[in-house]
Image 1 (cartoon, helix red, strand yellow):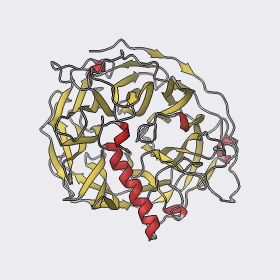
Image 2: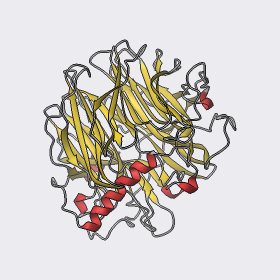
Image 3: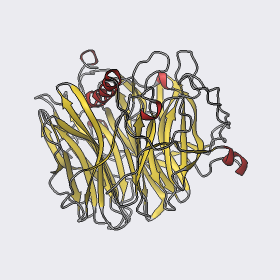
Length: 536
């Protein structure tokens, strides 16, 4: 089933200054100058199109109707005006959403037309088309150089990782660039205990025939990386297979593939090592393939991860963020960048945004540097992208505008660099209250946000709260064409990244904080559909 496209109109956001900096730490550093005004902002999502009871099961958890979270976006490598985005529509507190929605733009993100693939019952999934699932999650999109669009999802019924559950990784193809979607293909289906999780999709811009799907598959104490590919532009997919097995009492998560100019694939992921119920180490790693995914190298360590996770600055309650998960991008110049949350820069007090780069195809990586401008406040949920001209952009949320009242005032930023040392900052979205986000085992806007570019314009696609409890969140795109309204404003927003930092040697208390943050990330991925009262 394909819904009729709906065009979103362009809305230019109000011109805002920077609120007083508080709520994030005790640094005496002077407050940075006010950032430049907002660039044009587009609301992509709207009211829920789903009918009550469309999932055909009794409610289990709190349903946040009209809420949209966890967006992802892709750009056509041959046409920078062609963008496709996807997000979770109507998030459940107990995991996943009633369905996924998508949108396509052919004018660089100024207007969008919405549609859906049949990944769940609420978007038209049924036994005949393979989408007969109660919920869907983890949207990801890609576009090949021939304009073929791809959308991937995990689809689930029942309580995941129980004998009566079922799940699949489904891929939908669009021959018209994302306006309509063909019947999804299952790259893997399971019934019972195995759980396929945190999938992503990458189209090969060096060869339109190829696209790649990668995810982790949990079964007991095992959590290897699985991989499937198409060699005919998405018409068929190869059988799923393991490309990296971390061994017993270990698992991977957040697998993502990038393509280098010579066609080499680099798959990055987080590896967790367990001792009983505790996470004893968290490491960003990568594997490489020089034959389009047929064979893969031994793992390469990118960096350890020492993340506490974001928390409410007043209450200390955990916010559901992307702690321990990385965002990776590759540029046409062969450079690779990966960003993640890390507390090493503050002596373990709070997470900042870490960035590491590789200039040799992922074989070696630089020591991480901190790239969020205000280190005295928490920064979280980074996304990274490299424009075709080599400019690196990193988007993230922080709490520099927060005040002592019960709200959690939050800003969304873009920093960009041409040399990896000097950065310029601009505001993506107006200050909003994170406290009104859907509560899905923690206040939740997503484990990731989207970031691409259209020519020299960065296009973040992201979720923020609206202030309306009947429509808690929406998905937006901002056309980040400048870093300020004037050259003077741009110059005032310049700063240098912090020095490279080695991992800390943590105290026992700090080691437990890092372990607990990693455990929360893993636990929140499991038990989709389980009643709220019996889960974290």
